[in-house]
Length: 240
Image (cartoon, rainbow, N blue to C red; front, side):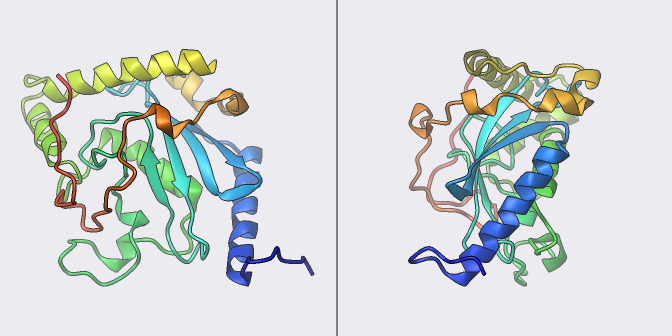
């Protein structure tokens, strides 16, 4: 039987085993849209790079994020924080992602979510990241984390692109991420063919620098489980 390190519970050992299996599965069968790198000495924190889907305003984007797992994973959900600036209805100003499957499966009538929409142990990193990619193109504006971004997005959609504030801010952020991709030596897929070829996904993630100090997010902000935008930080207006 595998010996436990001092101070390590049987629960966290079980979580590490589950994470090791997930990481191996992603390495053996990568999927389009993202690449991951996990520190084998700390499997509870994964660095992630998400590519903007071709044909969307996020095309060419290279969005870095950190996925942090609790010691009782997969019975409790991980958290996802974007390190790259991302103007999106479901992303707080500090970069925290607000998505139903990352919420504990409790019955909260005020959230507007059903327990079945929330986290359960059958979810995994793969399903989370695929949900994030889907969310880029189809935000959930019914209970936004960033109210200003949600209002801007709705105006853009309802005007059929006539009100381009949302798209303009996003494209500006995409251009900034392209500079980071060049610095990291990563080629971002910009066509469907490049995006969907699995071999293209095995980028040299060991060359990436995920220094959170590079980004100006406030690490001390509170998480708003209901994603109604009423967290302790004020929801700021996006860049113009």
